[in-house]
Image (cartoon, rainbow, N blue to C red; front, top):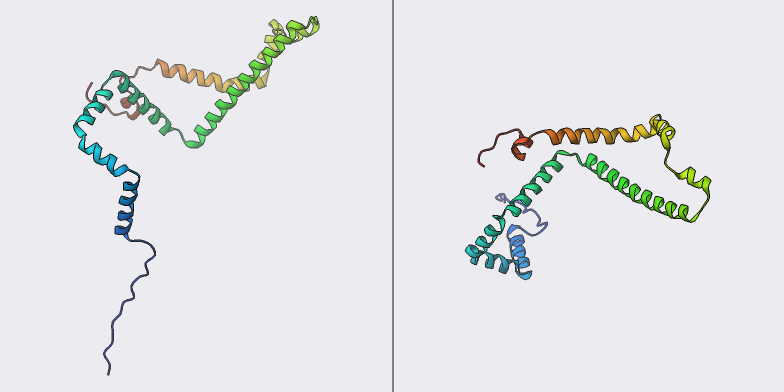
Length: 177
């Protein structure tokens, strides 16, 4: 009787293996000059590091790095949908302010040319009774309420003393100056 042959089917090669991918990466880095750049960086390490440290050791550079880190910490606390909503609301508000100013400037020029007294009275300031009517305008208060709440929160936050931003953000005390 014949002896049984044991044969394991090798898995099919779907793509390049790790060594081939590494060789391809090294070749691509070489073709784009990144290997030469990295090699030059390592060779001039002491001089380059001295220049980088001297540049970063200035008060303006340190302030910039710290301010950027505060921006990143702040952005990390906002969910993307809320940030999107606030940024596009800000964009719309800025556009409306700009459009409103252009319309007012155009109306002002038109009024200067026109001697029509009735039109001037219609577009003039609201006066005391107009202000009183504005105070009873629900749509105006609905629009102003988030702005006033934001100003209140902004003012309260400005009044809080802060020792170090990282300590305030994390709640953990930090050591050092």
